[in-house]
Image 1 (cartoon, rainbow, N blue to C red):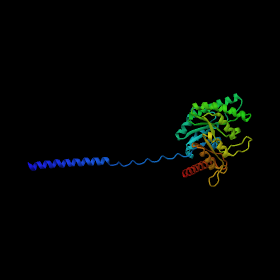
Image 2 (image 1 turned 135 degrees about the vertical axis):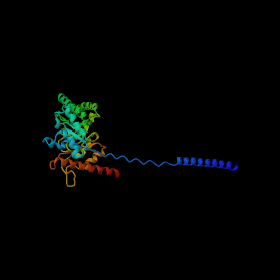
Image 3 (image 1 turned 180 degrees about the vertical axis):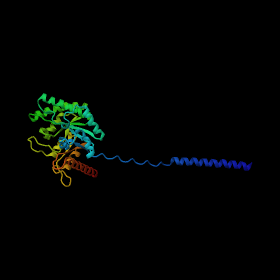
Length: 322
């Protein structure tokens, strides 16, 4: 019995010791720190700006029938890998109310992953005309295009400020027209943008005054790298002109004419211009607008695109180094 009792006690003691050891092991394991989760990969940095293709860059192909307006978004993606387009109403002038046509245009853009960015409006009446009837008819016709732009999913409509009379009378007329269009555009979640594009609008001082007096949050500017003249019709400093319009900029037109053997634009200092644009805090679309004659339209577009992307990288690297 003694031996047997001792054996049972020994077994019980051994079992107790084993249970305690296992409990301690479990406790120790529970207290061991878990391996740290891998740090998430840093989010890719957003580029300083994105490129959009302006339709006027291909105006010769469109006018000569070598390119159809419906295929413009397809060409933008397949030929240039650009994901946003800016139409000119001249190339589908009678289609503003043609829903079947607009539906097909939108489908071709969507099928190719291309955004319809804006429509540039020409020839739809003088928005800066002092004559109220003429001006109201122009406003009405621009509303038609605002509806078309909304259907396509655009962010803006670009308008001109044609008119007659003194600078002051055209300024006051333009403010009235832009306020009216701004109210209409707001309901459609669109912007109405004025480009320095002939007449008094090429004078940045006049255009800035119009925009200051308009005060509508849906009215802004589309600065073009060229097209600047002062109140006397003399050529105006394009860099100063863009800088003066940047507070209202919602789109940019990077106009180009020709390039040297290093790929630099020969008429406009693109880096200087982009420093003004980016320095003003602009981080949206910049339109490629090739208007030269020496290079073919496709080659001019690619040269402009290459230069803009190169300078975008340079400016981003310079900002990172600061």
